[in-house]
Picture 1 (cartoon, rainbow, N blue to C red):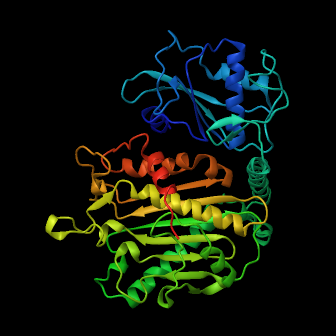
Picture 2: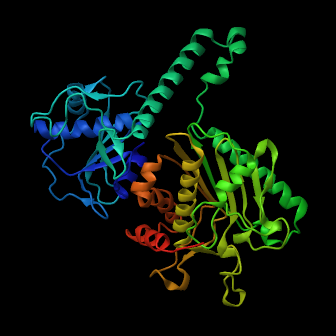
Picture 3: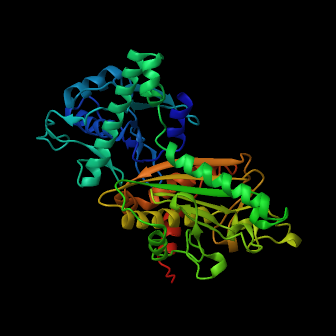
Length: 455
């Protein structure tokens, strides 16, 4: 736990589950109300962290106005604040965490998730409710910020988290009552009570796609084919959560055909060439393998699948392993390079096209799950194509894989695409000798990407 909390100080940032606050007089009742608002929002979000002692900027920096003593930043005080403002109440923990570089202590308040009903504010702040307002519900919204729900999607996300927590409690209680006897087996309680990862269904769809592609690569391609993706690949998976239209495969293809493009090689793109068109697979899944009928380099041998139930997976080799970048005479060999800005473009375009597809497929509000993975990173060196970005020194990866999961609402994509992409891409780039991307990298690349037109 301490190492995890130290990472919040080493790389301070605000996110939907992380709030930064400057040093303030914790004895001031209105300050306490401001903290209460953040704690209630984090609780309703499903848990998170309130980190005190940083000025939120680009990037955030330590607040120099450090108090002489931190003894007032205690678990008892913050739980007293929660009891004053939260209904139902909950318990938090305050940790005084040493900065891994400077050794200075910072309060990090850990807010648990698992709320079974939305937590409301039960009291006005002394300033007339400006800092915290009676009978308000606070959630984490894109920005990020803590504010009342403003849309149906905001309420859906809040209630969905509470219902899931209640379901898990009920199943655990049934399992405890029934034990492991025959009744539990007949009702299926043993398997149901076992915690189910929220990305389990998406992971299963992803695993099936990987297994099928690897089987086809083994059976249909020569050993030296670029489409075997021997030096690595990335796997982007997505799931649309909500009520979906009952579409047949032909209708799914039509929806995909109409999606906006943001690059010259868009994911799930429908080609007009017969040998590159998608084809029907099991369970009305739409499938396409661009490496099936001709020799293609890794970055252009996409394999993708889209299901009527809203699952999507894209498997693509590293573009750096193909003719766009490989130059054997210059020592640029497959498996040795990793371009700095490509992940920003690839992640952002995948998110945008999935969001648009979800909007056309869903009936009413919906949410999006993303599972993003990179493989074959070990030994690759970070570089900037055409020296578009100034880089100093050599940054090399020593860990072979990176995987992350994100769940967002479409409104969050619209309001904070850069923040979502940065959350996915920044830890990936840190795999390369702790490389820290420039603070404006993602926003600048997104402006470039969104400013281009493709037909």
